[in-house]
Length: 190
Image (cartoon, rainbow, N blue to C red):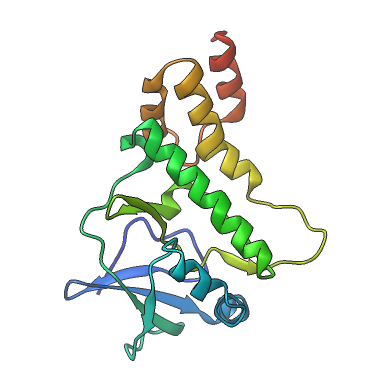
């Protein structure tokens, strides 16, 4: 079992590879949200729309995990700093569509990082099955700032200043700092 190096921040579970197969653990602390994700019909709807890849429950037991899921192995992993303007825009729109569907099912995205999206068969797909939480009426979208720094700010700079700003996402894996984005947009560095 080899834990995916990019899957270390989420206390809800992690991704690992074993014998060429990809698995995702779900921790007991995330059980309530995961069950709501499935029981609300959100998971099924996102699969039907091709916005998320399906999973199947695995009998693989992992220490500390409440559940283990097997997911399809993508043939190629790409990163936001490698994407064209159109790919980043497509990923941004997918994230908003997933957020809208989540709200329609009483759920909300707890994060909105560009790293939750991959391209599969030429289309963006949301890959983080553990990004959904039950929505409480009247609460704001806490991931909004992350969405702005991962998508909106880079897209703005790429479209209005210089398309090469997309490559800066390599240096800012947590998204563009918004103060820097504003200074770059206004052309006032230093």
